[in-house]
Image 1 (cartoon, helix red, strand yellow):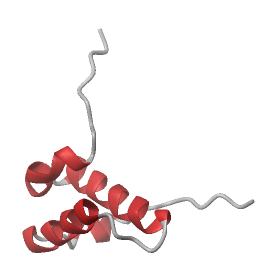
Image 2: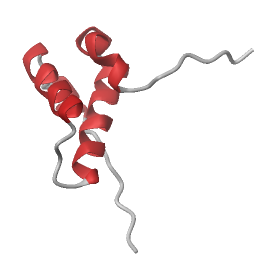
Image 3: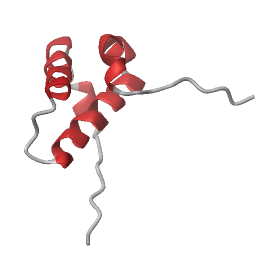
Length: 72
């Protein structure tokens, strides 16, 4: 069995617009992927956008299931 590493390029995140982010979120909400890896790839892209360009991902952060944590 081969494990696939998902890498999101900086260029892919830089190329995101409000419209493409909305399309990405719509795909994730519909969850109608041919296989789990396609959905996981979209999830990783939205996650990268959320960390690097949070203003684009803010309306869709609920799709990421990111919970704040306390490191104290």
